[in-house]
Image (tube, rainbow, N blue to C red):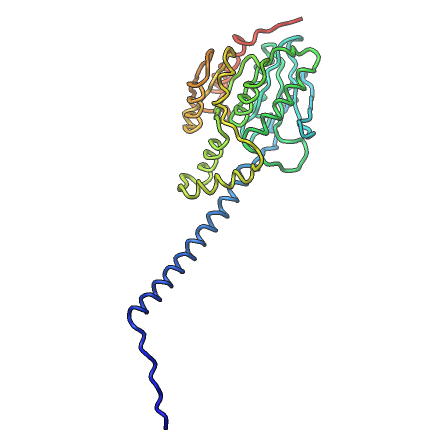
Length: 315
């Protein structure tokens, strides 16, 4: 009878090596799973940020009992239609274009618009989003600047509006658009911006922090990369490089203690901008001003700025 040969014993070193390999593979699988979760969560939140559009118009000129206004729509460079209201002021007076902020619409600025109209300015309020129901992706300022340029072109063709003198007010994404257009358009004479920023990624970071709090560096890096994917093919310029072209144009920068990150970005733009300029720091942004006294204080800042820097010129 043939004796069975005993299997050679596995040495302790080989056992440790095998356990080490298993540990490394397991760790890599766990890290890959965590990375996949972070990428998926980042993509979901990034889409929420770039696709946010508030289409609910809580107030209209009719609800303000206004009679001196017209519905004036326009098409942007891509042929997409946008809705607008023209609040009619003094014939031959300049137009002030009001640009709403992130995840907002023209109705949010109607109170300010009526104040400016009561002081004889022509006032135009419009929506950055299209007038249809289809969704659209925002690159947080660059596309909005193109839409604003089309809106100004449309307003300049309206009879009774001085086409040579234009003022712009903008909040957050509207502020970026206003600065971008003012740097290129010599006939924009006065500019007021609230919660302004020079790079779209600055607003993106603010919105991401509001959604998830202080995100870790890896999540932030991944989310920014996904933002670049969503805005692929679009240059996202830093407006600081063009601030020198605003020399001679009166500029009002408004910042809020309630938005420290954007307040810092606004202060940086103010410091780099050429004269004439003014910085005003208020307790709340335009979007958060709800009480009577605070709203009046805010709107008076805008009104007085335009009264001093965009004189009425009648025919």
